[in-house]
Length: 177
Figure 1 (tube, rainbow, N blue to C red):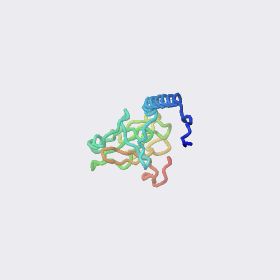
Figure 2 (tube, helix red, strand yellow):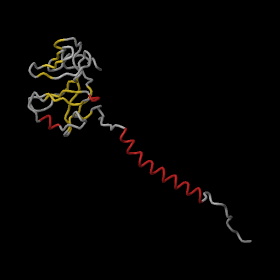
Figure 3 (cartoon, rainbow, N blue to C red):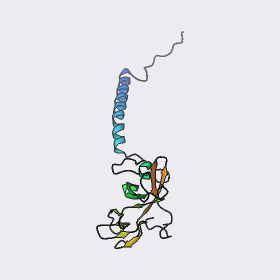
Figure 4 (cartoon, one colour):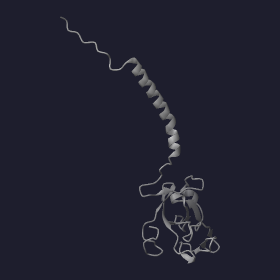
């Protein structure tokens, strides 16, 4: 008697194979179409290891450091900082940026306000609060100084990170931490 291999039915029929290939093709096509849509709805993570972000303009475009550093000393540039909050950056006499930025939110009711170069103050037009050039309260009703943010130039971009150190204006722990 001759030994022969038993003929068993294959583990997958032709129909199952075609169904598998069709399903794989549909899944690959759907994945290729849905990936860009998913990337559109998920915001990019631009946060550094230290919690810093790149300073941006009003349209959300990164601002090259040279654009602000080429301004005359004493210039205050308003950028979108942490969480998109408006933040003032100051060009120092030596052509560098001041190590902290001042967040442009009044501590009375959260209004945003302009820098008034004539009076050398931040002036809230809503309720009359005034702050000096470092963000300390000059006149109320604002109860607290303005928040600070660390500012550094890395490469060709300005990075803004949360201020958690001692407030250099008061020598105490910051109220916003």
